[in-house]
Length: 141
Image (cartoon, rainbow, N blue to C red; front, top):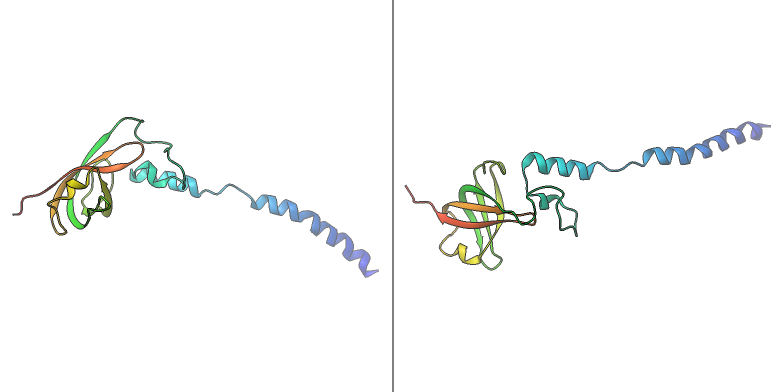
């Protein structure tokens, strides 16, 4: 007798499991958050691409180069890898002040600069990358 009462309840419970499972399935909002962050911070579009992607959804048009001027202090130079780490001030129209490692267009640009140097630099942004296209030490004083 007791089984007759439990069986309908058990069957109803089992029937609702797929419905509950489907309502819990929804598309993750993480990719959208990454895109929103990239737009609000003016971060390079390629910085938020999923692994294996090579084309950003927004940003400079293919073939165009946008340049930005920056200044800061060099913290690390890696000539072999063509990279320089700079604690920079706000780069107007591009990004807030922060410490960041940048690629350089040509490793020779790093000749003559060392950690501790205050520098002015130009960033060149394309659809695929952001690189330092020029860098020069600021006069001391």
